[in-house]
Length: 148
Image (cartoon, rainbow, N blue to C red; front, side):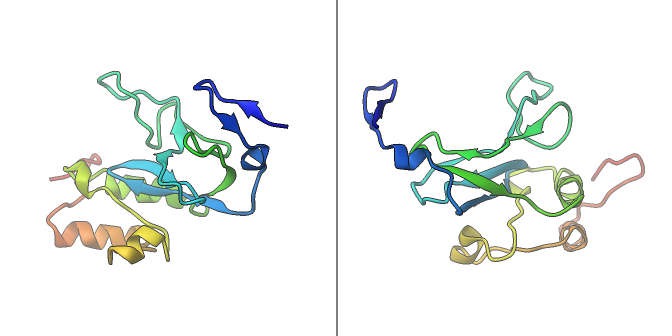
């Protein structure tokens, strides 16, 4: 059975079948995102429902943001599970990354992540590793949760 997308193209039902491949959540510029496990080139946010102080969509941890229940690729329509960091690691990672004043530097990759390996970026860092990296770059937590 083949359906039609709104844009009029045919839909292969195989692409809508859940797969064992997983989208791996990582932090890019302070936002939790994942890449399509089918390698179609799509990267998208994996949180929804949170709006920042300027009224723009913000897909970071906190506020009323919720995790996407599964990966649904808006490009190739693959459905997959999302692999998240264990336990409270997500909140701990974000707490440290959000101290960094420049969003370009708010990145975290799980151990062995394809992008990190391809571009020789740090990966698999613990919150303690991220704190150390912050201190090495002059970013320290201050009393009251701020940074310098």
